[in-house]
Image 1 (cartoon, helix red, strand yellow):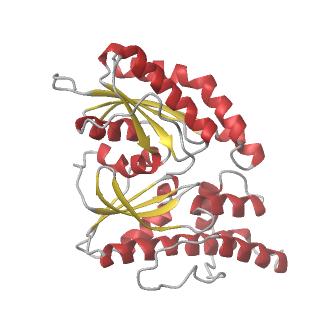
Image 2 (cartoon, one colour; image 1 turned 120 degrees about the vertical axis):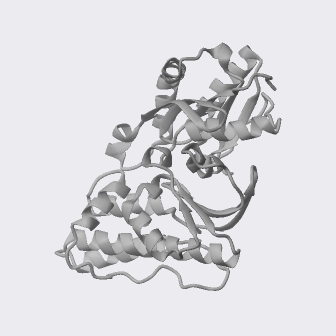
Length: 333
């Protein structure tokens, strides 16, 4: 480990459809964070095409690394470590950031640190003037993940609930596609829901409360939307979007608050792409007690980004937890 006062790390992220490079100082100060989104590339398919995603990562990652270093005002020789996500995600996509990180680690003789993408999301709020603390209840909600954690420390994540089928963001995408609203579904559904006037609860609650059962499920409400629209083809799409969004978010609120109270933990972290949803934030604040605290990162740090990877990498660097150059990627955490 370097003896200098400031520790500079490069973070790389390519787990799905964003390519990102970031330079982070001391695990808390973002010197640069450059992200290339593939939304426009995948729009015509209404979802991420793995082969296209990995090819796009290859085309841009070297340029993003150069831009990140330039914007941070540092060179490769200033780096103390390089961190990259190697799980979970699309295998072909994950390989791009990991192989780039391996090449940098080998050529500069600096530590390679492989990061769990979901743990990186949970670290995101601690890049915004919030000191790192434990324990907390963490909820990661995105297009590919809906997972509830009891987080006790760096690398110490206990899964206490997850979806048994679709992730919440995936459900938003599928419903938006069925309603012919476009892609990605989350922002479009949120926008349509705001325009609803009647705001009736057309669809039933997702799963009942059951003591310490913190599972999520979205296939049922997705089917309910499809069946309802087929029977009511003239129904206002804005009202459908409103009811779907309310029910999809309501189970997240119930589960995360119930877990916090069961574990007697006052701090809650919610992150991932769906955490950018304004209605989710409203519902969380409405449901929380005065002695409970909520941390949600800024929208730019909710989506996939390399700053959270580089920041978390610093915590592993401090603990001398490094990865061997033979390490591989994994589709699951």
